[in-house]
Length: 345
Image 1 (cartoon, helix red, strand yellow):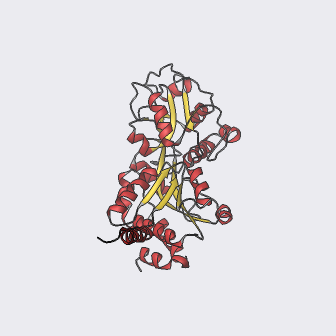
Image 2 (spheres, rainbow, N blue to C red):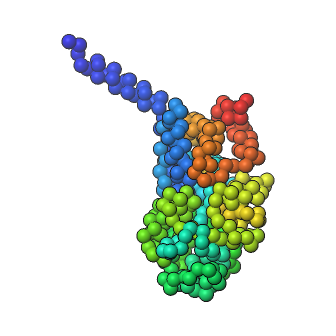
Image 3 (cartoon, rainbow, N blue to C red):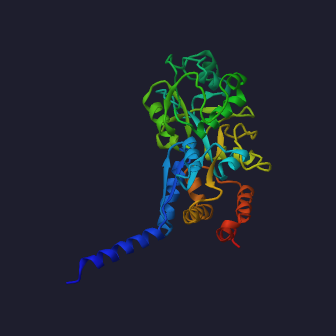
């Protein structure tokens, strides 16, 4: 009989060798983009790629974790300025574009049947419109008998890029909102019940009669919530859809910067509450092997991930934006080989 100790030693060495070759990529942050990263991670692994684990914790937490070097990448719907990126030693690029929609719990009212303007939404979230049969809402919806139900505002409890997109939009359409509340990943809400993540808001709105909240479009569909129609910057009534999201994305001017919010775009068919979702990476990674695995994942996503973007009702980046990102990656000498493959060189 062979001694057990050499066999155990060999087994341990074999396990360690496999583990060292299989770097697990970790990410966290944006709940808006969580379904996209989760699906990509599964498809990437099936295609022969490494394992990617993403946690939906909110954009603010994602920025916190990547800054502390606790994850390999962060998802954020709140783009950082160049000054912030330089200060924290990070780089960022957009990965896809998504829509944020108002959702309500009003029995008897179908999805898209209720129409709200930005001004009325701001008055609701300021606590100045308190009942669903308020004249301001009734005038916009003369064919609906609005109930006298109290309005229950549901908003994000955690720091969130979705909140930044929503409050940025409200600041554009309501001077009072801009003056009293402003915009940010976290704001001092005048009222409301706080839900953590898009999941939390979807849960509260789904169970609370009279509720209204704002969430990413994919969570709206997944939870079969009742979304509202809205008026856009052109004064046209639009409903959330791949077509209205695409119209907003096409109207955006990316020539000056890749880091921008996409709310209230001028196109006549554009959905008014839109935002790009971003990836944050360490500019000088302290674990080059893990960074290389992370870049392989995003190389695969840019090459093979567009069908998933569309299947989940996000909008792919315009070709010109993608070209800018790839040009920036080619200029990064530390990852030259990966970038050449992405660019097809």
